[in-house]
Length: 250
Image (cartoon, rainbow, N blue to C red; front, side):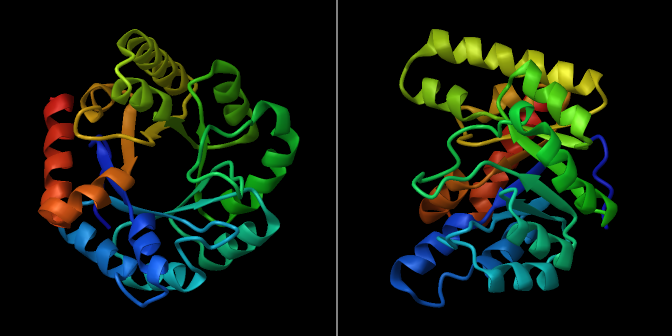
């Protein structure tokens, strides 16, 4: 497998290819085909979130992705016994623990690690022992970062949704304040020895400032790329995101 150390990696989330498929209950579009196209277009990894209600990605999709991919699979999952068992059966390269509510349209915030520290420590220990890289999806909040570090997570993924929402709504003072928090907490998490990732809501207009953080090693982007693929194709959509990331990092 390619060594991506030191390079800002792009993980492409293919959940919403499955959303389109499931809207008609058909076999297409196939998220595994999308994942392979993303890999060929230069994605450094593929992200898929197997939700409790299976609203997009299915168990069969995870089976197929594990078989088809040569880049790492980042398996997003809630901290439930069912999802832990699935992850331990497949042993993907990475698991990212995310909060999950049935009524939400997408993941609406970071995980509350500090309040569930003991439970989460016991939950992730078997995943680490199985060789999975464990990531925790959290807000840019010092107490959550410290808790993630204490429970033994190797990675944190900072939730960039608020920053992106402020940008799209034209609330630029709030956007800049949230970006400053993300920058500060990226540096803080790195100082603790955590690998830092970021994602949620990133677009061509918002990716640059986050990609420029030297501590961030990976961005996970899905909904925007899949939407943009309708207009320009999946590979060109990924190439443009990669170009903007590299330009910002340079």
